[in-house]
Image 1 (cartoon, one colour):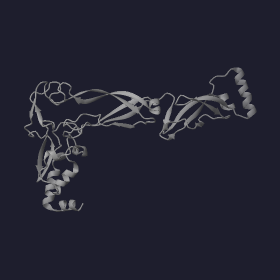
Image 2 (tube, helix red, strand yellow):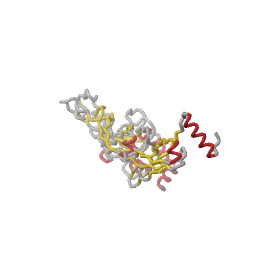
Image 3 (cartoon, rainbow, N blue to C red):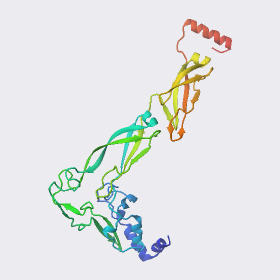
Image 4 (cartoon, rainbow, N blue to C red):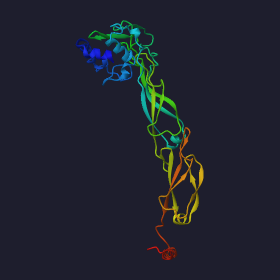
Length: 320
């Protein structure tokens, strides 16, 4: 922190700092044309991901504080930038989200070109040393006495240029196609839950390790079950006699079991009954199933039923 203060308080050092800070994204600004995370320049604002393959913040600030040589050779880098990570949303059924399971999904992803084996050269053709980076795979640029390295955009960091570019991939060494993945859905996943598959994202254009595949779950609503946290909510209908006199009935749980449920005499519409331990299982925690009672009032009565109801109302002192 003291050294940072010394840089910013010294007019000459501050001038150097301001000069390098005006470089768009330290060399990753507009004009690169490749997506962020692919190892190529981004088209937007600064991202720490853009520094992953270029030595990181430590290399930049080491240059500012004169702790390393002014010009860093390409081989001192931490390695080629990682490929772009892919975020993909998949909709699963309500019961799969509760119970867990395995699903298959097709994800559009950048793969190594099968025609050229990822070399970028036409079959049978060789490659030559890249004139831009002289075969190192990286180029240096400086501003105000500071030097930084980045993968060479001419050869995608490979150090070699195809003598004749592959027609299938236009010399990039990669193609876009669908890849099928088998995904294990954990028990009790919620809307927005994510699963990361390390190394299953896009291949790096610079020869680095692949990015990750990040799966985000969406959940289809169920016609009978609803979820609140780890609790399962359902609504069951009972008739007037069941609600008035009490009853026993079988309640279906989310795991397919049938549990005997007692409806107490005098149950009102909207009453909630709890079946403990029959909610969602997640780790060591288990929710409950909440049963809401809906009392169904008959819409029509026979003359006999109407007379019986009137007698009941009169004997009970009920207004009608």
